[in-house]
Length: 150
Image (cartoon, rainbow, N blue to C red):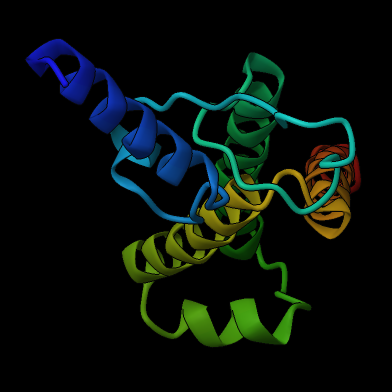
């Protein structure tokens, strides 16, 4: 066998070996740019990990993050005006002070968004992303409506 044939055979063996395993949940491609945007086979719609994420997903994640920041801000504004926090978890986080509250709340939401992003091809993660976007949007609308109440 020639040297070129050996190199070609080794390349095919590596390629087949790579494709014999599914894309892992965490890989170097997750942060450095990946290769896989969707499923390879038609029967892989649910439960597939990929390492490329679409614009629609990023916009949804940024929307949830923006609504979380707005919720934190409006919560602090309403508390300074004499309001009370009805969420017991947020009430406990408020004991750490304003900065601690914002950092803890943002950290929790960021962690949840990373997990949901990695699991975007699972129906429960899609439900969680769209549900969080809807709930946060309604929550910010509620905060804004409180400014008209006297």
